[in-house]
Image (cartoon, rainbow, N blue to C red; front, side, top):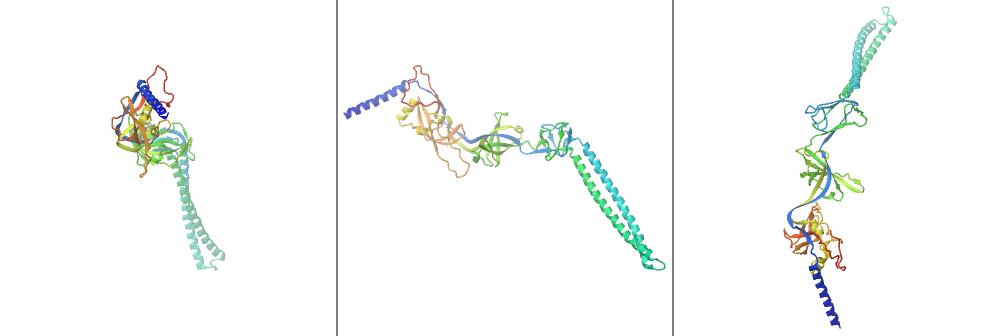
Length: 444
C-alpha cells in the first residue's frame, strides 16, 4: 500500500514538473532590457546645492546723513552703477554737505576767537609783568628808606601792597594764557571734527574691486544712526569665488577640508567646475526638523563665467575608484518573472533572501567613510545575467555607488556580460491564466 502511495506521489510530481516546463515553453516570452557590465572609474559622491558668493566683499556705508547728491565715475569714466570697476579711494557718491560746511565754518570761527583770546592773554601777561617790575623797584627803594621822615608808614605799606598785587596780576594773566591755549585746543578739535564730518559726505571706495550692489539713488535720504546705512557692496576679486553649500547632518561626516568638489550651474549647461572644501561651519541650522551645516568651498573663476549668487549643483567626491567592475543600480533592483523564478528555484539557483528586502530591492551599497581605518560592513546582492531566453542569478558583493552605478565583485562576471535591468511583458489575448499558487510581485 505504501509503495502504491509513493508511486502515485512520484507520478504527480513528474506530472507537475512536466506541466510547468510545458507552461513555460508555451507561455509568451518576456523581452529583457539589458545593460553590459563595464569597467571604469566610479566616484562615490554626496549631492547637494549651494550658492556662489564672492570670496571677499566690502560693505561700504555712510557716516554722514543727508541727500545723495551725485555719483562718482568708475574706472571707465561712467557713473557708478552695478558691475562698475572701481579703484581704491575712488569717489563713489557725494552727500549734500551744506549743513556740514556750516558746522565747519562755526568751528573755524571758534578757533579764531580762541586764538584772539590767547593774544590778549599774552598781552595782559606782558602788561602785568611791567607793572610788577615797577612795583618791585618801588618796594626796593621803600625798603631802603624804611618808615621815616622821608617815607611815611602809609606809603611804605602801599609800595609793599603794590608789589604783591603785581605778582598776583602776573599769575592771573598767565592763567588766562593757559586757558586761551586750552580753548584753542578745544576749538581745533571741533574744527577737525567738523572737517571730518564734511569729508564723510564724499563716499570713497576702500578697495579695488567691482560694484556688486548699489543700494541708493540720487535724491535718496541717507540717515545714519547706530548702524551705518549700506550704500554699496564691493567684491574685491571675482576670479575667486566661494560656494556656500548646505549639507545634511547624515552626510556631514563625509565632508573634510581639502576634499575635491565638482559643481555645475543651470545657466552654463554641459560645463563642470571644480572646487576644494575650505571649512565646515559649526553653526548648524534646523528647518522642519532637518539639521544642515554650511560648507565653504573655494572655487577659481579666472574667466568670470561664474556670477555671484548663482545656484550650483554640487557633488562632494567621497570615494574614488579607478578601473572597477560596475553595473547599473537598476540591475540590482530587478528580479525575474514568476515562471522563470520557479524554474530557477527548482534548479537551486535562486534564493529570495539574496535579493535584499521584502520588496525585492537590494540593500543600498554603503558609502565608505573617509576616516582612516574604518571597516565597512559587507553588503551583497543578486544580478541576473542573460543567457539566451533565460536568466541566470549571480550573487555579488557590493562596493561603493555613485547613485547610478555600483561596484560589484564576482568571479562569474566579466566586462561585456549582459545583465537584465528590466523586462517588457508581452500581451496575452487568452486572458490571465497565471498559476494562482505562484506568488505574484509588482513589476518595476
